Amino acid sequence: MTDAAALGALPEWDLSDLYPAPDSSALSADLDRSAADAAAFEGRYKGKLAGLDGAALAAAIAEYERIEEVLGRAGSYAQLVYAGDQSDPRTGRFYQGMVERLSDISTALLFFTLELNRLDEAALQGHLATPALARYAPWLRDVRAMRPHLLDDEIERVLHEKQVVGRAAWIRLFDETMAGLRFAYRGKDLTEAEIFDLMSDKDGSVRRDAADSIAKVLAANTRTLSLITNTLAKDKEIEDGWRHFPRPDSARNLSNFVEDEVVDALTAAVGKAHPVLSHRYYALKARWFGGDRLDWWDRNAPLPDADDRVVPWTEARKTVLDAYAAFSPALADIGRGFFDRPWIDAPARPGKSAGAFAHPTVPSAHPYLLLNYQGKVRDVMTLAHELGHGVHQVLAGAQGHLMADTPLTLAETASVFGEMLTFQSMLKKTADRTTRRSMLASKVEDMLNTVVRQTAFYEFEKRLHTERRQGELLPERIGEIWMAVQTESLGPALRFDDRYTVFWSYIPHFVHSPFYVYAYAFGDCLVNSLYAAYEQADQGFAERYLEMLRAGGTLRHKELLAPFGLDAGDPEFWGRGLSVIARMIDELESLS
Image (cartoon, rainbow, N blue to C red; front, top):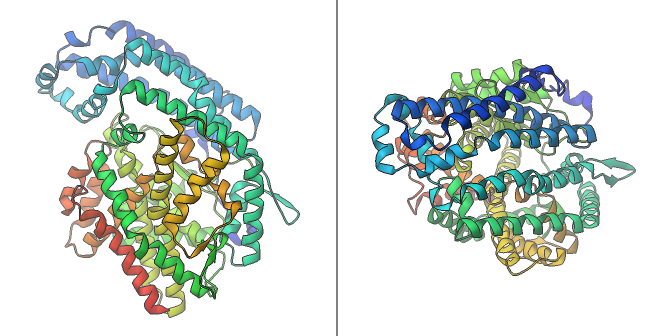
């Protein structure tokens, strides 16, 4: 809805660094070569890993990594092409064809991690004395963490092969359903990204009408969206049962390499803080809007005296890079590469994936950023967030394809830290009391959306998945669970009505990555504590921070935070992170 001229020229990505086109000979050749290499790998190593010495095992892992990286490049390309236009059936056909082909090829590699998990622990530890194998020790540690939950090889093979017509197909149905939705608004049909952008418009009537349109469209599609949700929850229950995971979120926690009790401590701390965080803030915001309660469509409304100017792309770029450079010139140099090269796709357009993400692709290439930039200050913060991901992915790439990726709980560290750097940089330049209040309120809302709201999403998922084990849930029942959690977390100052009961249905994380959402709260609270340590640190903090990002997936959260004197297992850790938000609300009350 923002005038394109006000935004300036927005960059679009060029995916030719991966492949020239979906029908390119380079892509076909990589797929054919990978199929042959995977088959040869299976013939050479299947059933033989226990007899390999350390050097031979290291060579096998290196070959496996090489094949997987080629497959990862092809898969990344397909995902990015699809994200660019999910409404074009030809794009959907290409994406599905790639998913199926990659699944077929990778089936030949499935035995490898299964056999690695059956290796005798003492024998493996002896092999790790070989330097070439010791390099892969963190990856072997993470692969073998799944040992208690693995099934027979043939069952694993069936689950792998059927995924393309099971879970992956349901995810595709969700994505294409959402991409195809159009929201009627004052004589126009808007995309999801465009209509949700209006939910933070300065005009209250715009927010109300946008909310009404969203509610009507989601309600009209709730039968399909609830079927997707029910089916995926049941699918997860079945697999969790076979793998003997005790809780619906246990598989996610294991994949994040974070203990159940640490997640429980985080969510309990956030729940305990609701009265001094979200409940207190929204009551304060209601008073700013002239009442004692706030309509739900006004939750993300800018303050009445907020600066609602459009931030051109060039200004957004300078703001973020300057903030990064003030912390670390090396960090800014890496970030600048995303702007100097066609690695960012910024415009909002029909069919494009909503929201924003940073896709790491593979270490032999580079990450890409997707945004739906509309010129709001929040969009500048989103740019800072996704650029943080991108810089992290570049730095971690040196660990290689198997060890570059971090667990989800740590994947948000650089992104949230980048946001905080940008916000604090902007705040320090602001002396005007009214502008400062507006900026603080916007940041507090972002943090509440990240910590309180995402933790509430996690609680919603827990309740939904637990209740789904007793039978399929009607859309109305899912809405009741949603409303209960929203009321508890956001507090009595928010005024809800029946239209809000369907707003669970558009959130992609519930479909794509069950129980992902607490990772945002984990990352935000972690960064709050990390930033506080930075403010009190001597020289060398930035270098230690970059080393943390370079570690990729080789270290767990305790090891990564130890150089900063932090420990997520400490019961007081989460309270310190949450107190940062509370202090910002304290300042807002004093400014009011």
